[in-house]
Image (cartoon, rainbow, N blue to C red; front, top):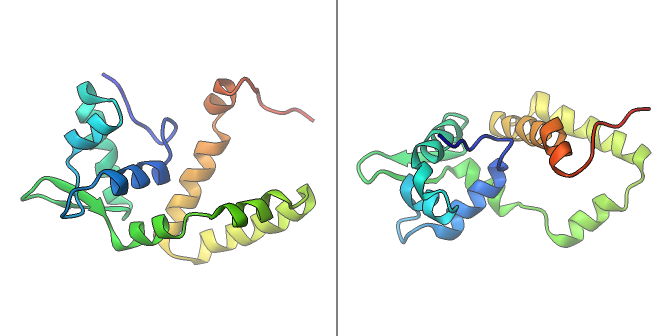
Length: 143
């Protein structure tokens, strides 16, 4: 059985895919999303991931139509995806300044919206996974 964990695909990427592929009702079934991801044979893995994302408040589920859609919080996150100019400004920061940025991120994690805190935690786990570093041909840095 295949899997679709947070280490395989970022939550934000799945939310963007759901938004891009949704029907006129703003929904997508697990089967339709699995097809869009090229995982037609692994609908169960996609459905399980969607259920977790719903549990965390990113998605909603219409049991009558079996349709998944972005929650209000999920819509907010997708709408606020970084624009190229914003990403360039972050990229221009030196390493020392990034420590200050991380201090602001952790403050938001502790005191902000629980959905945002969950997404921050999961994004950090995705980005720092040793498995991802190996996939990119990089091991853990040693100092």
